[in-house]
Length: 497
Image (cartoon, rainbow, N blue to C red; front, side, top):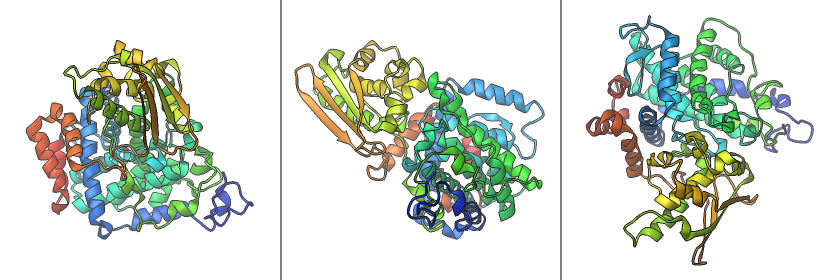
């Protein structure tokens, strides 16, 4: 992998990150940042962002209890694996959001919260890294905080918020260097980068020293995983990926604390993380570690208004607006397939692989995961029924004949001039009128912000069926006032059971 020109080795004499390891010790600089960051680094912007993503994480996690068919089998398996020896009074046991008893050991609680948080594909997204950082950072921080509290080691609210922020930052910076190119190698950035962010969150809460974090990172290099093969049949692997990452983060930390030796230079080494996991030709160690602690890259993370792959969101929003414009004068509210002659979607070549490839399971998905990764289904559904924040109803329409008919009229082409999540649509209607619409930034990006009322609308749509409106409202208030609680996050965690 070639280095970009902002690196000392990008002069034609190097084709990987290894030769830069002497001048830019990326692993060491990341570890130093994790070990030495302080709660005084919590700016107002950081605090507000942590509260926003935490509320969103709670919503999408408990939402999986109601809406994800994988939840009960996964829960049953982990409960059986843990065994009967763990009870409510066992020291160091942790909660899974919305489930109350039984309680779990930290690594299993982290696994379950992270897996549930990712099960609806509704969790926040970091566009430059094409990943979801919150499910690993927040799940790890919650389990670690609760475990420490159960052992009598209270941590401040500020430290909890800092742990989340640092976990996000490490994950997002690594994901940015992996780039979308890592997907072409078959890896899922959310989990491969996420294990390092989870370790970072745990390390901040446990006040781990540099050497221990270094060894934990070194061990994590052999545990980072997540295969994109789930796309073949809409499998539940993807939902488990961040859960595996959090579970293994706890494992790596425990091993490192016990003195187990991990690999050094795990990020930048010849056989290290970046060289092994991405063919991205523009990896830059200087960018990876530049201004650590000064510039928080993860603050550009975005919330999702729709429970689908982020690459489909621009198309969903455009289609929803077209639906609303056409149906505003009618009482039916459902668009007829006969109203459409043809639809052409344009997207980047990278996005085409995940959401635009005209395979049968994308053109006419028969399961939720395939539908989440189908531009055909998402556009057809939004045109026919509209698009609403927090709406899980689309996945009850997998056999809908109108959606099927509209999907048949969609073609997808690629455009190399487009970038990231840009979306372009051209629709020819039955009356020969044409609409051509384009959107560069989907709703939720900093350039097209997700307003507070939308954040709460999404939360209530997912949390109300589990907690009820009164308790859900109390949770919203508790998260909003989180940094005002100088004592502990424990009251909030108790509320989330």
